[in-house]
Every structure is written in C-alpha cells, then in structure tokens.
Image (tube, rainbow, N blue to C red; front, top):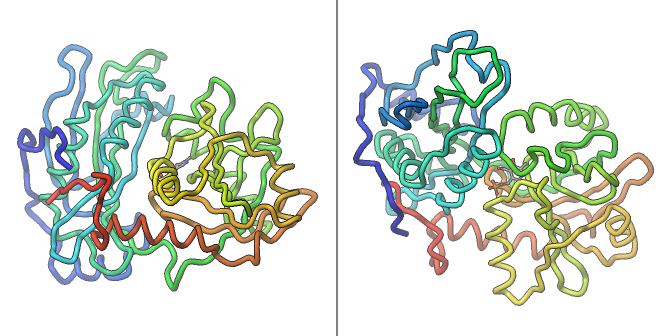
Length: 366
Ligand SMILES: Cc1ncc(COP(=O)(O)O)c(C=O)c1O
C-alpha cells in the first residue's frame, strides 16, 4: 500500500563497525525476542521552538541522558511495536503501519508529548529497515521487530509539558513466539490489581502501564499461570484485556465476541484485523462487555467453545485454561480451537506474503 513517507529526508550515518556476517548470522539464528539489536537506530529530536528536526539513521548506541531528564522521573514515554517480514522473493513488508502511527499519536496526546506525523513514522521505519535489511530473519514466523518510542528529554524536575523530546526506532530480530508449535496458555483472572481505570492511561501505549503490570504477572507466574487477565477497576467483573494482548471468545452459536473499547483497553491492530477477517467469513463479530460471570458459566456449560488472545508479538495465542480465586476451568478441550487456528493462519499468510492481501494492509519497506 502506498503511504506518505519522509524516508528520503533521513540522513544516514552508517556505523564504522558493522556486525560481521558471521555474528549477524548467529544473531538471526533462533533470535528469541528483544535480545539482539540491528546495527542502526533512528533518532529525531523535537524542541518547543523548532518542532521535529534532525531526521537521522545513526549507529545503534547507548543514549546519553541528563539525570534530570523528565522521562527518568515522570515516565513520559510512549511506544509502538510492529514487525518487518521478509517474503520468499526477498522483499520486506510491514503490516498496517498507519494504524501504529495513528495509535502513537493518540498515546502522545494523552501523555502531553508531541505527535510524530504519519509521514515521519512511516519514513523512519522505511529508512531504518532499508539500512538494516540484512537483519530481517527468514526462518518460519520470524521477523524484525520494530520498536518506535518517544521520550521526554527535557532537563527539568518540575512537572510540565516537555520542551525537548526524542523519537527513536530500534530493531530487534525476533523468532517464533511459540517455538515448537502453538500451545494454549493458562490465564489467571486478576481481581485485586488493575492495569487501567476510568480516565486513566489504559488506551495509551505508555511504559507505565507495563511497569505496573509486572507485579501481578510475577504473582500469577508463581501460581503457575502464563498470563494475567485484567478486569475493569469499578466492578472487577468486566473483562478488559491481558497485560499485552486483546481478548476474543468464540461461542457455540458462531458468535465471536471481544471487549468493546471502553477507554481503558489498548486498541490492538491485530484485534481490528481479526474483527474484519472473521466478519468477512460470516461470523457474527460483536464488540461488547464480557463479564467473568458470563465466561465462567459459558465455559462450564459449553457455550464458550474457544478463547484466544492477540497482539503483534504472538499474533494469536489460544487460551486453554482460565482460573481465579474460586474457579479453575478448561476452555473447550484445552487445545487450540478451529476458529483460533484458522484466523491465525489467515493473518500470518497475509503477513508473510503467502496469501493475497485483498485488504491493502501490507506496506513494502524494502
Ligand atoms: C496492552 C496491550 N493490549 C493489546 C495489544 C495488542 O496490540 P497490537 O495488536 O497492535 O499489537 C498490545 C500490544 O501492543 C498491548 O500492549
């Protein structure tokens, strides 16, 4: 899909010490997630007086930050996550980057940070991937994960709209989320801790949301669960989402339901793509409140036949078990369901260029 881009406006300062072919091959072999980084990164600087300036692709390196930088004290940080996929013919593509660009803008508005234009967002990832194109792995379900983020580098301990901000993009080769095949995850339904509340920052992709989700995640891990399901902060009964993924349930009558965007939930790009894909396949897809009471009853009496979580990192993750303080239920037969796996296949076929993209979702980067 043709999208506006300022890629040609980025100055490229190549590293004097590129990773050797052998070391890069080692980094691309079974890269896992978020451990290795490509040779370059993007940096744009914003000031109150001059707006965004200095669009640069430069060597990947530690940042020098003044200890009084606002982000270190008040967490004015927002980020995005999307992937670059190498197709069989060697071309490199990404999935619906405009949606990520627009979400970063919404996050920026909520966190009083300056917005990066869609053109600069698309331009920045094109410019980086064109320089580091050798860093996109080619093994099945692997990709180059792109992490654009904005931080307030204002050197000031007072709390104010920052006068100096940086936007960076780093890239990390990532392997399949499920090494050795898709496996259902177990979910702990958390009633005591919430990731978001009315009027809070749940719909923004800001670092603080994730920092506060760590402790409940660790507690759930100690109980033997893979992920935490968060509920609304008012009634502790309405399902919102997992710590980093949106939620869907499939009902016996062919209805597919997902929590309605209530201001606390992050609007996932994968979520909205699944809504479109399943609607076209004649499922009745509804966005509505889903309560834990409904889930418990539906799983127990067989009305809820499948449940899955979705997000850029794992694409679609089947849920096999749902438990809380006073219940422990197996969803369906505990194995990945048919709708779950078929929509997963449909989506990954589009992303990896194995199926025609009739939606105009794919955007060529290199
Ligand atoms: C809290 C949260 N919900 C949902 C998602 C899924 O969003 P997406 O499909 O755009 O990756 C993510 C990941 O970005 C997330 O962090």
